Amino acid sequence: MDDKSKKKEEFKLRIYKYILRLIKFLNKIPQTPVTREIISQLMDSGTSMGANYFESEGASSKKDYLNFFNICLKSANESKFWLALLMDSKLVPKYLEEECKWLLGETKELANIFASSILTMRNKK
Image 1: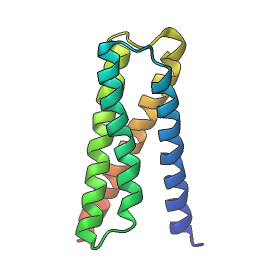
Image 2: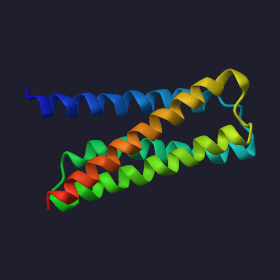
Image 3: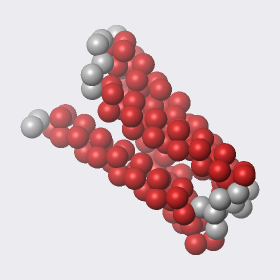
Image 4: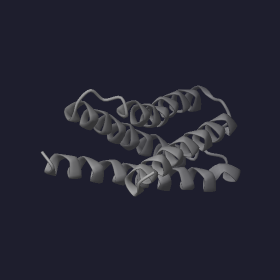
């Protein structure tokens, strides 16, 4: 396996582990009408990031591949919004605050990686 393939596999695993951790976190948040809605939105956007990244491997063209990365970036940005909203609205119990901060930080890093990849792909056109 070459270095590029190895990095792709490591990134795929990183996203997968992130989603597993997000799911476990969301499952621990006390259910109220408000948190249920936010959890639903965050579940959609957080898992969309991974699903679209995994799906990008089957892209039919460079344009299609780039489109998957754009969706990943949008999903990451939406996830950042929902995680910040959970924190700032104090809907996250104290015992989950550190996990929420970690998820927010990791989401920001993933968004930066997607954005950087998109810029690189656009410059190669």
